[in-house]
Length: 167
Image (cartoon, rainbow, N blue to C red; front, side):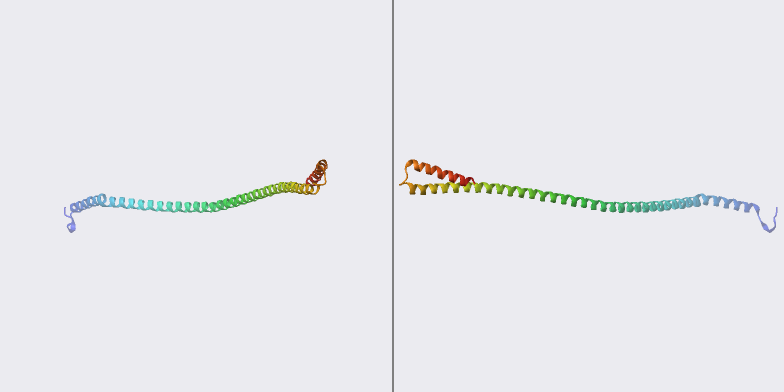
């Protein structure tokens, strides 16, 4: 069969068949692996982007939580400071009260002690006055009074001295 323009259909079909085999081979060897690589790369970057966005969301939530904690910690510190101030004021009032009671006790003891000392001094003074009076009376009366009169006078002086010391 002679075809005009010297076209050999058999050669054309063989070239088409070779082209189809070459296209299929290139598809299997190059296009499919490159396409799979590109899909994996796209998936990898999408995954990285999602992880980065999740990390940003987590960081923002942690930041909000820390700010909330910081605010509550500030309030807690203020509350504890106020409570410590109240306790300090109570302790101060208690110490002042105890010091006042102690001062009153010391003053009371000092008054009692002073009163006892006063009584002792008065008793000693009374005894000294009585002794001095007796000695003076003895000197004066020694020559003029008898033994019985001396005893009566002595007892009378003691009574008067006892009455004056008792008041």
